[in-house]
Amino acid sequence: MKYEISIAGNKHYILIHVKGEMDADSALQYTHEAHDLGRAEGIDKFLVDLTQARNKLRILQNYEFAYDQVAPDPRINHQAKVAMLVSPRDHSHDFIETVTINAGLKVKLFRDRQMAMEYLGVEST
Image 1: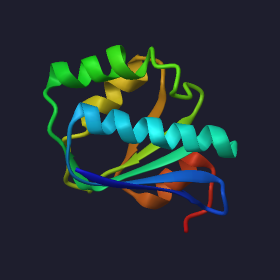
Image 2 (image 1 turned 180 degrees about the horizontal axis):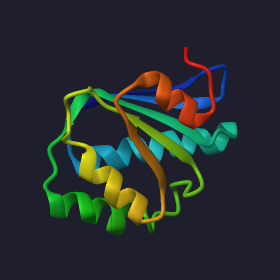
Image 3 (image 1 turned 45 degrees about the vertical axis):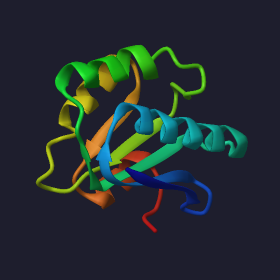
């Protein structure tokens, strides 16, 4: 899995562009890096572009990622708003949305970029 992290939207959100098959360790790594950058820049909105990525985690691994790794992690801004943008026919990320919401995070999955941007309250770039 490869990823790129940048400040986007006139410094209104952090963009994480992910490519390839996702695993928990890599996902936690880019989440840490993005949230560290957000903290340094005073940004608490994140667009995770997963249109070229597939979640290869099994159900239990998704659950453990949300509850055991992300939810208790002090490096992650739990007040941040996160939009996950996926390809229209990709349902590999559906369950991770459910468990991260249930773990107390503000995460929402989208198949339309404009709707993701509206959720974040930023203009599309």
